[in-house]
Length: 190
Image 1: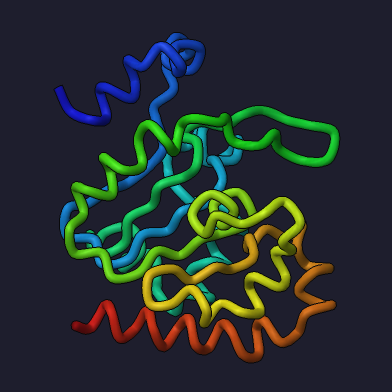
Image 2 (image 1 turned 90 degrees about the horizontal axis):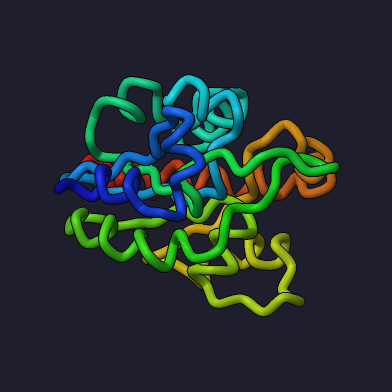
């Protein structure tokens, strides 16, 4: 049985499987870069295509890759903290369910033996992978992204909801994004 089938049959995912929903992730064995975000949004869950929204357009721009490289090269893996859309809250989407990353991420990452960089998108993946304290601020983590290289590159979530953050933190697109593009280009060309 494949990992995909195991995820589908996991009792924790029964409510989604019964609705005919498929887990959203991509773990190609030749991936060189893995993007770990929070959880699929509703549009992504409905289309089954990762980062198939305005956030994905901005993410690809920040990475300096087009849709063909992102989706078809096999060089980029995508593993969210939860494989299914978790639902709505008062101020956006609900957080990813706990325990999903613990159970599945090690197995998926193990399949991708050539990964050179994990891009951590947003606070959920950063807190999990960088072992941050609750008091650590995402802005400080991103500002100090070089502390986490060469394994991890933390970035803000590219959602349009973060336009205010981007306006307040112009250094991100001025300084961090060009370095991200350079690192991604180097890894993909090796």
